[in-house]
Image 1: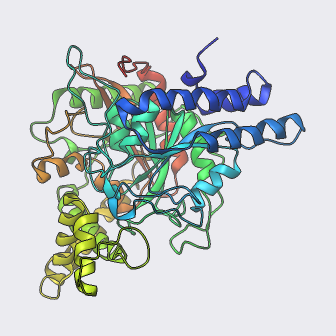
Image 2 (image 1 turned 135 degrees about the horizontal axis):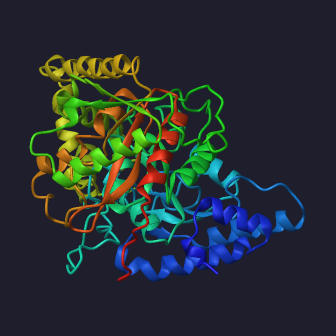
Length: 494
């Protein structure tokens, strides 16, 4: 029999429903896998084996009683530590929130529990989701389960959802939640050879998710394959009156409508994404993807997204600006860390608390954001960035008049070694060059594994769709998945 921890969402859910194994057996197997891998990978900040077993016991009892089971019944998942979980520490990987236990549950996590999922623990991430390598976490780096052949150098699992990607790739969680502000689901998925989808902005509620940049943040699913992502996203999505940006639309039956036949569909290939000096392995994987979609029946159309080159600087004005506002609430007064030096006044407490609680990258982005919002520079930077964002979104709108989906690489390279890029923030920010445009436009986008590079590391391809057309994104991704036949897994060393 296949090892339970090798199974994904659909296989676990169906196996539990048929009685092939119990939900308790599944939870027990994954709890053991998490415990064994945690010292090496550091994928979790907090583990909650009792929560996984509690949810599993309820599923088993419901099945025995003949009650209908949810779409995630018996599936234990990892929860990114950006989602508020009632009674369980939620830190956003920052010391400023260490020990904080919310008295409420985020809408997304509650939907997953209602669908029958259980929680293995809270997954590590870049602090406040600010980073592309999971090196900014206050609780230590996440280590990718992947290694270069013959090399023991620890690799980045991507970021900010690095704990999520590492856990799924290492088969210590069948799936995990992620959040994507500028690529934080798609880039780590590409780095670790798994699938990850960011839905249309507003498709999943942001209520109970620790905010980074409110006009960009969006929850999504990370799992073994496209089908599992579709199942999980269906459970996560839906209108939430508690979130003013939530889409008041019914959740489509994405899983039932999955179809890899691309006949009659047009796929756009933006010429601006062919960067000078592009990694040849990335370029080859893109060409392979084009050939695969053509084989699936699609017509390939060259398109132009002329404002693409401005996406990265636009993002790194808007996102820090919103972060500087959102993170002002962490002041040592109401919850989390409080640093109160002897004889200190209120302003001293604010300064000491934030100095001790925020890491260097978070401080850097707060300062950038405060600068671009200041009276003398607001129009020169923030207002201009918002205008360019509108132009970027308009480029996509114009392109989608001629094509159904767009195919581009997910990231400019495969995973790099920890410490390789962290010394230069600008070099680290370039990791988001292919993922940021879709985020600025609020569009659905998905990364699927496309193969291995010359170093034996995974590369991802990204499908971008029209607003609200997650189905088109999932279908094109399924066509890629079926032709890529990606089956590589990290060689177990942990």
